[in-house]
Amino acid sequence: MVYFLSDAHLGSRAITDFQAHQQRLICCLEQMAQDATAICLLGDMFDFWYEYIYPPLRGDIPRSKQQYLPFLNCLRNLTNKGIEIHYFIGNHDIWTFGLLERYAGVILHKQPAELTFYGKTLYLAHGDGLIPTYYMQVLPPDIQKKIRAFIRLRTFFHSPVPQFLFRFVPPCLGDAFGYEWARRSRMKELAHPCPFKGEEKEELVLFAKEREQTNMHSDYYIFGHRHIALDLPIPNSRVLILGDCFRQWTYAKLTDKGTLQLLTQPS
Image 1 (cartoon, rainbow, N blue to C red):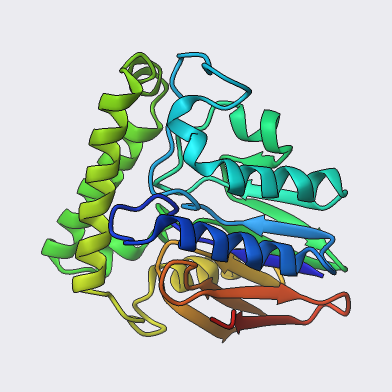
Image 2 (cartoon, helix red, strand yellow; image 1 turned 135 degrees about the vertical axis):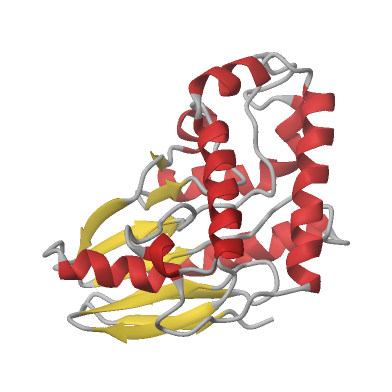
């Protein structure tokens, strides 16, 4: 079996019981490990993750990441058992520079990737920034403005120069800024959730359709980012948006027969 999950937002200041949240995620992964050959984490597993230049004061993990040791040890235990862990960066955990691969043994993806499991091709990505080329032409001006602002911010966050310079910021200051920014994003999303926009307006669905129309076929498209659980057939393919491991606790499973299911973890 291959499992897919995303958007745990570990460490979010919008979560009242961090330890319980982390432990539930670990239990979910350990349950999957009973029959998993691979697990794909499709981004935003942390609410804010930045690897600063300062070396660890004890062990292999910097002090600013010690709170995540149970989760990181869980990932390392799974990879030590021979389970492939594919980690796709999201828009909250862009800034990883080797720690996850070195400590937990994950396979890191900084770009969308097409992987093959059980004879099925899967296009996998967190989903932020995936917009069909024609989309801006049909949107109202106010929505275009918001998308352009997001793209500019995303480009800045992915730029190597600011990424390098921010690594010199003391972790206590960098984390205070990052977690507060992320908290505001979570609270805004919780207060004003954006439901499924419809097949002709949902950006990730339109992105997958455009890709299919240009003869870049994948059997399945699997995304995170949107915090909605969606399983939608499109011509010649299927789109899954995973929901989250924050409120909904939804995930996907690909069986060894190539069947893909969107499921909910029991509470």
